[in-house]
Image (cartoon, rainbow, N blue to C red; front, side, top):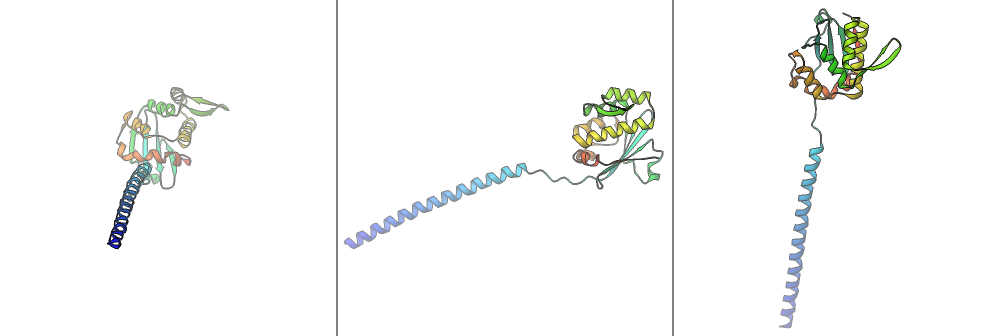
Length: 201
């Protein structure tokens, strides 16, 4: 009888200990899985979405006096500029989009970067958008326009642009360019603006 009682107690003790161990392991396993799920979810939120390199496009800006063609080559990370082009297609380029604007658009572009630096008469100064427009109106030479375009792209290379910049270009002009067409340009403009070249028409 004593043997049976002792055996039963040993069995009961083993059963209770095993039960507590099972509860402990299940509880720890559930806690690990739950905390692991939260960690993965938080990490996923910090991962940026993949952005495909945009297709290269040509944009023709037309003003009351003259025009400027820019070919944004996202594949080769460069910008080609042609002042007052007569026919870009004859030079192997396409005008995928046209932007018909007035000089207030140039003023906006300059002021977006808190002004641009221009070297005139051997002196480098920062000019506001309105000051740049006044210069362009009084001096119609290609030399000044090249300096202005170079200065704007230099600021883009240094500071980049946001989608707000592109949106304002669209809203302040008559154009067939839409935000869905150029949304991802902003992420690459700083890179391609580091390599700009001018071609004569």
